[in-house]
Image (cartoon, rainbow, N blue to C red; front, side, top):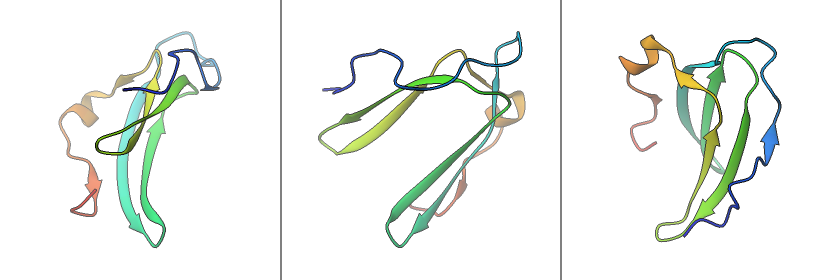
Length: 81
């Protein structure tokens, strides 16, 4: 069950008028865990939370959409990401 309230928890409103796009998503294994990087065209507001069984975190990006190129690609990074 989500521990977040659904309210905006971070980020900032986009500076442009249009809906920002997610340009790239990549991941890498680090000595401390897994790092996921999301490249955005503009700022976005988001909700973050934590889920259990299995333990994981999430970021719900508000008013953002994937770029056409992202929709056709795979997330690049370590095989276990």
